[in-house]
Every structure is written in C-alpha cells, then in structure tokens.
Image (cartoon, rainbow over all chains, first blue to last red; front, side, top):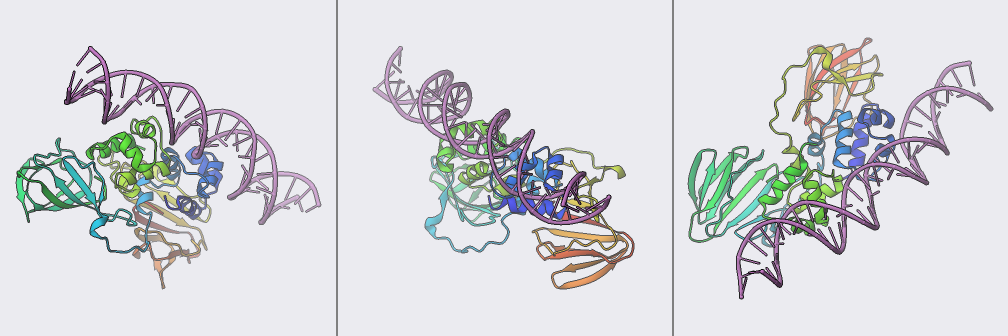
Length: 182
Length: 182
DNA sequence: CCCTCTTGTTCAGTATTCTAACCATGCCTA
DNA sequence: TAGGCATGGTTAGAATACTGAACAAGAGGG
C-alpha cells in the first residue's frame, strides 16, 4: 500500500478537478477524498473503486501502474523460499517474497506420492514449468500427458488444468506464473 | 468491485489453508477473513494487501486477474464520450466508460488556444496518439516537436512528457493509453 | 457414544472509515 | 474594503470495518 494518496492526488490534479468535483462524481464525501489523498486513512475497496471510476480509471489500471521503479537485490539464497501453502500432500514454495513490483510467481512445488491438485481450475494468467524429479501427469483442457524430469509445459491458465503425481516417490516441479496470481 | 470475496476464497482453498491460518499469517482476524470472503464487508486497501501478502500475491496481480471474460457491446455512439476532466482549457473525453476489463483509455482531447499541460509529468504506461486538428507541441524527455493534423506519437509514459497547443485555434488530439491510468 | 480437533460462521464490542457541517485561505469583482 | 465563490482542511458524530470469544457442524479415534 504505497502512497495511494499521492497517486490519487496526481490523477485528480492532472484532470483539473477539485476534491469537491470528484466527490460529486464518485458519491464519496469530499472530506474522505481529502483524507485519503493525504494518507490519513486507508479507503475500502468499494470507496477506492468509486473514486477511480470518477477519474476514468480502474482498480486494475491503478494497481498495475503502482510500485514502479524500486531498487532491490536480485539475489535470493536457497533458504529464502517461502512456503505459501500448507505442506501436506503438496508444498508450494515461492521465490522473492518481498521483491518490489513482482510480476512473476516462481514456485518450487513438491508433490507427495499420489498428490493431486484435484478439480481442474482456471484463472487468467500464463504459466510455464518443468519437472525436476519424479513423474507428473499434467492435464490441460482435454490434453493429458505424463511429464518426467526435464519435460516442461507452457499454457494459458484460462485453460482448466490439473497436476497429479504418478510416481511412487515425491515429485518436484519448478514453475512460473504471471501475473503473480495463483 | 466484482466478487473479491469469491476470488479470495479460491486463492486460499487452492493453497489448502484455513481461515485461521491466513489470519495468522496476515495479522487480520479470521472473522474478518470469513466476512470478506462472503462479501459481507468491503476490506480497506491495507487489509486486503495484508491478506494477499499472506497468500503470496500482490494487489497488482490480484486486480490484473480480475474482471476477465464479460460480454459487452463493442459499439459506442458519438454521444457516449464521457468528459473526465473539467473542460476549461483542456477537455478529456473518454470512450467506453463502462466497458468491462478495459485495458485502454481512449481519449479525445481538445486544447484551447494556448492550453498547456504544464510541468512534464510521468507515469508508468504506454501511450500513442495523433493530432486531428490544429498544432500541438509535444515534449518527451529532451525531445520536442510540433505535430500537426495527421502527425502522431508513441512513447513510454515513464518519460516525462508535456503537451502545448501552439495553434491560434483549438487543437484536438485522439490518444490511447494502456493500462488505463492517466 | 463421547471426546477432541478441525473446519467456518455468528455476534457483541471496539476501532476505523466516512460523512456533514464548519473553518481558513486565496482570488476575483465591485 | 467588503462580498462572493472558488480552493482544500478540520472535526464531531454516524456508519461500517474489524476483533475476540463463543457457537455449530463435521471427521476421526477410542
């Protein structure tokens, strides 16, 4: 939540609009606009959405413009992978947790024997990956194939997909998703 | 603000995490998580950010995945341009106001005699446009040129830029910006 | 069957956002 | 100078987000 206020003020100023004008168009009180722009309060998503609407922008656009250029070390140690799932049958460990303006979700996935992501699901993004160890049956749309170490995949996440470990040992996969949704 | 809750729940479930687990990692109470996921309250940006953090996602990623496939008429009449600025010296009228998943901000800009966007500013996006009528002096970075009807431009918005009407009549420009931030 | 551990939901109380009315300032015009 | 009308900021009270504890439903396990 980096200086939302400042950015909002810029957007408004750029349009030669007053706080009151934006308030009128968005249905939010001008005092709230003032407070939000000066980071004295964190608006609810609904409120922010209404304001952006009045400015002809969208939540999507607003946030995709956020966190632009910040310096950060490009290196991460082997101990810096962060578990983002609950390591029972499948473990998802991500790289670069706090990297600014992260556009990629790089995952090290470990599938226990018989592990299965279950119901094919879909979300809008693109993902690619490769099997490091073991054997994984990957289903994308109506295509299905067993991938072994060295094999890889690349597909649009909107296609329903599913992963299943078919080896009699744990399998590992290294994958990348962008945008970092999963 | 389309079903934020549903999407959040999907993200969580996909990770095999419980409401309580996410609460612990995000510092938000598990009851809030429950309420938010069922759209019974609209979280503040701070809160949402904390939750997404615990799920390994970002505001940017979360919203860029939002509003995917919704049907909508592709046609807009000449009377459907919406003024998003305050028409004094410069008028900004945008197209497709309520178009779902809008990725482009198409603008019809009208500059009064002597109008000037003033201080060069910058934001992260890409924009292109062409002069329809009159003459506009465009400055991008350290380059400056006068464009007349038919001339165009295309640049990365991160470069500081500025527009100035140098004709002795109103000038009009048709432009596009993506993502729809401006 | 009871016990316990897990899951998510409900609810009363607290903290925060949000609003409405008021205030301060600056810029016109008379 | 006063008066009007912009601008944005402040503040008490209403509305809502948020919390913690209590509740309900299900899954084993003895």
